Image: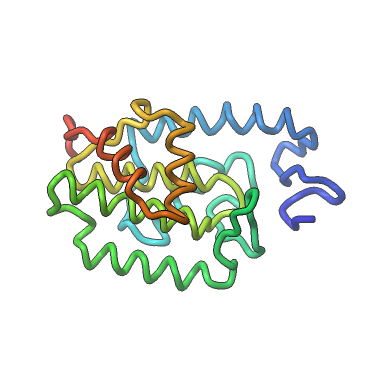
Length: 194
């Protein structure tokens, strides 16, 4: 049993006290869809670091879950995939964001190299899976903000969700090539630079 769930349940503790998983999923989808739409207009500002990633997660999930914007404190897995041990997450994120800073937040890269590096950061963040829930949406928004900062837009709607999921899973074992190809396909020059 997870400490993030109601006792004797696999339903996440939420501000609505909803204990029906199906209903909570619908509530979460409706709220997060609205929040993600808001982020299309006005992204969460930040310095592409841990504080920024946590702020994005809190913005998307803060109306639903008490753990929004907080790094998880227990181990999690999906299927056969075990994500980073919870006690390693903070140090690994700091190291990853330090590397991103050293790369000048990818601002000086041509399109192909940019796609390669953004695939790397997306895959690394995914394997760290820093939050109890909502990692994919928070990571995609972080990566989208990073792309906007570098003069690109990632058109997620160009990507098939199943192909993206397959590429994310493959990145954990086989490398980032398929993820890189998908992201390069979805990259467009930003028409409205920040």
